[in-house]
Length: 172
Length: 408
Image (cartoon, rainbow over all chains, first blue to last red; front, side, top):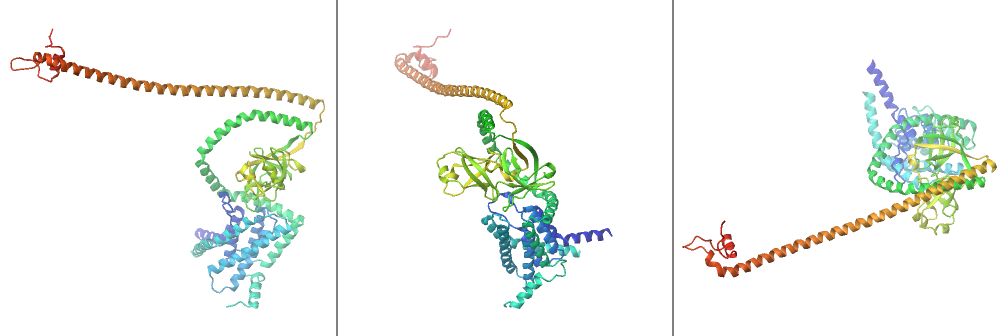
């Protein structure tokens, strides 16, 4: 009976692992800023949201993504709602790609991810600079986009491995 | 295979409008909700502000807990890094300490004089509220340079209060919650501070560059080209937001000699290392120059005179030390010179001794050759006598003795 309960708890944890990871990343921002590398930064949340929305993962709900966006705004000090909008737009783009794709290809996903983050970041920073009069450093923005794009590839492999572990764990 | 217009519309509708089986909320609904929140937030709508404040309280605390592992890794990384350059830093600090100690006295005098003159022009600010705070979250985000402090309106923190670290300007409070507050660092791109450049008292506006440096704006470049040493950047007090004279950073000579339009400022403090900061507010001293103030000034004058005397004696001591050091160095040099001379003389003496010995040996040889002819018969061993074998030591001694050595 205890074993059954434990298994149940672990399977719930495994189902919700992507959303837990999203909340941890939003609250913690493991972006290695403290290394002091010039211009180095990347948006882990974008990679995570795009990947799991594309795979239509169970437990990766839009409502929770919306709340994670609100948390992200608070941590960053950005106007509230901006990150939620960008996260949800990424979900939308990923859902669109999922609908039109018959056979998944990582390269195609990667290119579409670039288009998605370009669109979402442009929209987000347009809103920030036009409506909230935020001054932004465009070099930082561009390098952030480039690194986010480049890191999608290794992270997608990593998430795939994680999904296989989750799947195995759920069926044990 | 091309995607037709209808297919595109169907795919978009399915992605945004259709509520999927695994989702409780529709995507388009949440997108609209976000837009509404952004829209209301831009007009400072009260409900949005309340939501924001309550999320702030929740998120700051949980972020502090969740960041603990990363903070642990970060602190260890920094400890290892600092260990590698410990020796270099120590020797640098030791020399710096020596230099600074001598400067302290004169600085004290200047401070007192400064207070005196500021009081005279009624521009003397005193701290009326000082609170120590801990940095809860420092994301070092490249987009917004700000830190979260663990003091809020409960601790009388108000908007616009100044944040200092060891007397150096760090930033300004821009958001106050009940238990926490947000400080906009001066390195942020949106921060604009009226500054004064010393020496020269040049006025300018400083903005952050979004990284670890500041940028000087609204300044005539030609004014800076005349300087060959470091320029110190202080708050000017213009605009009344900051008290004048708070140190910010310095401009290195390479920075203002470069052709760049925006001159960069190196801050005195590394904002990525903030742990504890002081939140202060300043107010003008209420006293006017009445009899009490005059007494104060008199006391201050006396103190300045006393400090001046101390400085004089300190200077004399320094001079004496300098002279003593010079004498010591000279004596050491002379000592070395004499040691060298002594060694040289000893060398010469040993060479002379060797020459004398060689000469003596030569003389003995000549004497032996001369006497050998005369006394050979008296010393040489033959069949009939028991004298010495030719060439032996006894034979040589016998020759030199001019005959057999008599034993007593």
